[in-house]
Length: 245
Length: 242
Image (cartoon, rainbow over all chains, first blue to last red):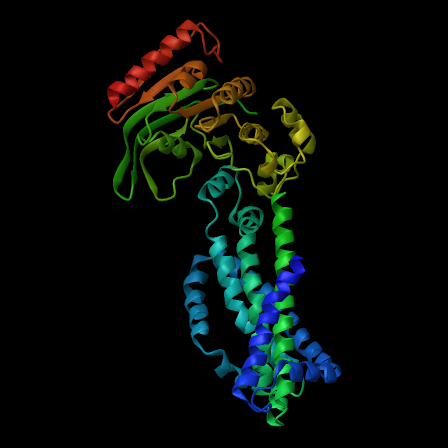
């Protein structure tokens, strides 16, 4: 019964879409109806799967690298106040630079292949992961830190045994955000220059006026992002539950 | 455990130029249980912190240290009102937290023995979340004992517990901490009257010692006449100071 209720909004959305197409008499090369897009999805399933695999690989590698780099940066910044003063403004500044503007540069530096897309995905999630984890690392309850000092712990052991485990929820909330952002980075990278991937397929379909295929690709991207978010969310929830006991 | 030293404090404490502990002189005898009683905000916890070597942003204008002149570093354990158990470690791992933080090998057998002493042996593998408030505070006591330090600072460790649990914890702590130099900060006159071999009252104006029933070994029964009389005298002192 709950499954039916979950599908209801989807049905509602499709109905509005179909109604708009019928009532506004939009030509199918401007706005194809749901049935046409569904057919494009089915007919191009091999093409979509092949390109989805490329994008998913880019996203997962970017996510893994971004998580590791974000983790390391946050720990480094939390351990060293001078590093904080030096690097934090740069981090904030990096967020002010539009990601779109960097995509062509990354293509220039890392080539037409996966490298530049991984770099885009990494760049777009690096800040949210670093920032969420860092904020959690510097808000350890002071009484825990005081207790650790009385016990004779040095800063590195306090970091490893108290601050990092205490900040785990912050890292996980950063990763939950990253799961949604990373596909955006990869797609932007593919728009700027690629010969494979869902972003590339979108542009290709658009250029050839295959608007139904373009819509089908958009749907695949959205579904992949949702699935990725659900998987990361479930893993994070499991980690949090294990930590609390 | 090495021979417990006494504690000496003389001076005042400032935070950002503001005096948060007025000038005071306190001598805590070695190997005995000393209670420091006072209303909230008079600086008793601050005084305690001076011995723990903490004090982020606090400036001590004076001296705080051991009566034998050696450094207190490494000779002090502390137990606070919050149990400060790490939620991701089980009870036994929490007891051995100090070893973990110093990079030593934890002594699992000793941790288990201490948990048995505080009656938590069966819960050693549980996470703190599964424990009641009293059980958590007993785990914190076992962690304090695991440190095996000659000086133990107690900062209102039982004040969040209900009356019966508190009385049981007082008995247990008195038993397991016997022979150590204990400085116990509390705002509860009945607790000071039960546990203090020496009792000092800190008010905004001064520090004064109140005689206790020295003939009666601590922990004294809560319904003992003399203990109740001391409780009354301490309460009166706090009332008059307020």
